[in-house]
Length: 279
Length: 297
Image (cartoon, rainbow over all chains, first blue to last red; front, side):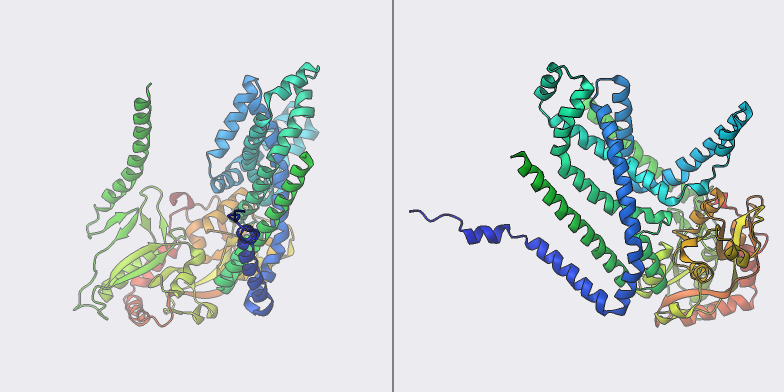
């Protein structure tokens, strides 16, 4: 009998997630530092207030981007010329501008202009005679649109474009025969999409959607330039006030690492569940 | 169009971008070369040779290169003038004068304020200007020169502001938000008066001022000398109000134990005694300083 080229032990050693162990050690060491060293403890105590802000901004922005992405993605694959071009225009525009630049652009240019526009619309409505709505619009001032809101808008718009492309890939990965079969059963295009194509498409791209969520968690750190008090901004404030840059940024980096590792493990679990369901 | 032509077209377009970028800095260099003292500009920052002479120097640094950190976003100390694209400000005038007295070569280095103090402490720069407030915390891991100007903090607000006239009234109205720059003594003072949620710390003061003009914040707390710069001829948009909030001295910052502290102090003394420093302080921080927020990048 031939000796197998790889023994069970070899396979176990090869597939064992050593990378996770190393990361786990880093996180554990930092945790110990946080518990035992006053400076690390201060850094973490200042930052943890921002964890909720970071996570809520990410959740809200990502949910919106999923909806936006679905609409734009459907537009992208449709045969309607207007829908197709508008969607492609949106995607190319957003993918062509770096996130930081987009955040500045939306927060300092688009939204103030929008508020002005709303005010002008209100004035016109009052002139025309529709006073109650007009007054309400006129009274809209920029303070009602917080920096967090603007940051969420920027993140949603950017990731909406990414999600749209993911949906498109998902839809196009469903065999054409599915649509033909659905239509031959008497379903309209919309019904076919809703009941046959999209469920399969979304299941195909769930891993990509999960990964994008993790990517947005990291990109949410950019909202710090708008002085939004997320975990990154608080770390910067702490470092600036105490000059303890090492403590601040080590803790911050490990904090993000912990969050993203947890999420990516969650995504893997969900992936596995979905694929076993298929069987 | 066949593939070769398409490729050539793309290369041409990219080439045009590159030439446009290079052309910009070349023009700025030519503008600067008109100056009678041999100053050339690279990316808008003046480049100097060795200044002064060994015989006239109060302390001879033997043409040593001294790196001087600036932010280029802090009126009136260091900024980039929008029209010419060249750097200007109090720092850009005083430091070459100091090197003239010490026989050294001034080298201006641009960095960001947020990390400047840390970078000086680590020795990345020989010294930093940028109107740094002298305080104990910073003195622990670095050294300060003698103070070259006294300043107080005041509030920069929109013209016609009638909801408050002082920091106390500002604190009393819970709807009001204060803006300032991150990692400044202005920020430290702001959070002494207000809960942190009412203070927004931006990367630079121009950013905070943009927020003020837009209405996102109701006041920006800053050093008066800086506020005078932003008020300047922009008196129809921004104004300084309120009594002085704190009083501090500004000084140059050095790494701990630097051997430049003493020579620079001596140079500053000379400039104080012959009235030059006072002249410059009046020029940049007095009421006649006319550069406005629109004039700088």
